Amino acid sequence: MDEITLGVVADSHVPERMTRIPEAALLCFRRARVSAILHAGDMTHPRVLNQFEQIAPVIAVRGNRDIWTRAGRRLPLQQVLEFGGVRIGLTHGHGGLWGYLLEKVLYYTVGFSLARYLSRLPMMFPRDVRVIVFGHTHRMANKWVGDTLLFNPGSLGPEYYDRVGAAVGLLRIGNGRVCAEVVPVRA
Image 1 (cartoon, rainbow, N blue to C red):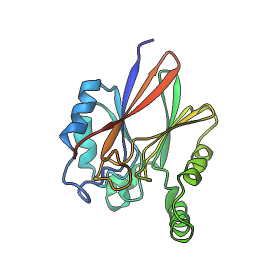
Image 2 (cartoon, rainbow, N blue to C red):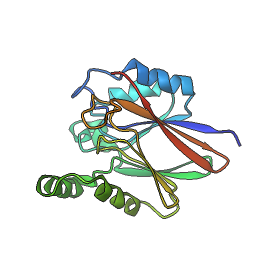
Image 3 (cartoon, rainbow, N blue to C red):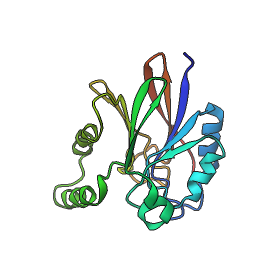
């Protein structure tokens, strides 16, 4: 079976944090010849999806900041996809309104915990999901937990948590194997 390469992006926040998608992100996906682009939410404006659709089909989910446009509100909170025989869960990960509010209370009372956040993700999907692509934390994660890969390339929008800075991801699937890579891009 041929290898499938998927582009992964999260938290682009256009026009909140930048005016447009960095050309380096678009170039990364073109050079990798991605079959599809997974957007893990908080694109903020639907024109972001249009920019990525010029490269490959886009599958997107709704982030907490996507509620401000009709197109954003129409996106699902999560999806299960299959590429190359591998099932992929796609979510922003904020857990809808109540999950978002609970996490904000925890954030302001006991602080942020990536481990707490990562432990919730597998509960959102069926057990046969092998990869969970997510966003929301603005922090890069590329971690196997048992047989499940938890992957977040970090924020494409100007970054303030990860030293990597603005980034996208490449998810490669072939012969039942999965690997993910974070690719820094200059905004």
